[in-house]
Image (cartoon, rainbow, N blue to C red; front, side, top):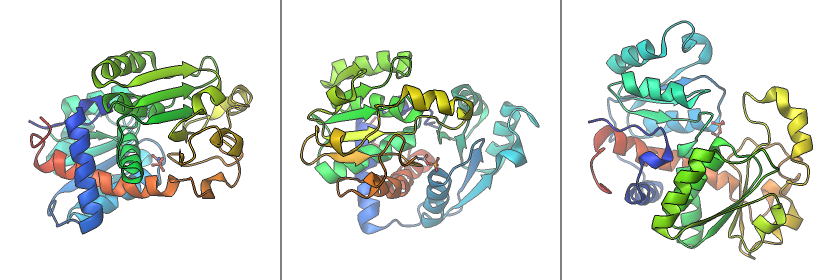
Length: 309
Ligand code: CP
């Protein structure tokens, strides 16, 4: 049976912890060519730096190969039905990492593919980013349970995946956004269910100061994501007052970590220069995409049933 990663909630707590341990081991010790002869298709409808580069390099370092299929080449759903693309690629490759406009497209791909499909970002979730972020927090703090993440900004795909995974791991998730820019409602309900089991908590507010107070991690993301270019001005107005800056960081704990999935819009969601602050672990997050995704690829391609089940 293949296993897909379309949502972070496709992984249970034990599996998330297993991936972090494997990522830590590979980062420290390097990785043998466990995926020799294997190929990953990178099927992208949107631009990418980190996701594309980290997946391609992960495959290379594991002895395998990544093949990038650009939006122009494939024109998913326009030149060819999504289902047919999935069936064809399944005959060539061992897994598909897909970046799509819609989460529904990922479900169609997975439903017609005989190989694992990995969500490389959709409108709803960005599970690989959230896993890498949790791994980064774990590396820096030595634990996850009991920590408070304060997400300041838009209810993006990253916010959704981070909320779900934080709640699975017994963390407290604060979310501050202007009215109307909340996290997805279904995600919120699922997060509440996870939190009830793990001892985690969710706190929603329109006040960034309230969210940031005594937080262990302050996290932000762009105010207008890919595909929302027409809303840039409207969003700039809505989010004024939600910028992460020194003043907001000073409300958090003294050893707070500043996180951002990148790309950043300096001077919008994050003040100019703050990415270089000693509290920023933003480039560790970017690096950890590589280590975490190596662990994920090995698990999905070689031993989907091993550990954490
Ligand atoms: N954070 C992230 O997914 O970056 P890219 O859009 O460059 O892949």
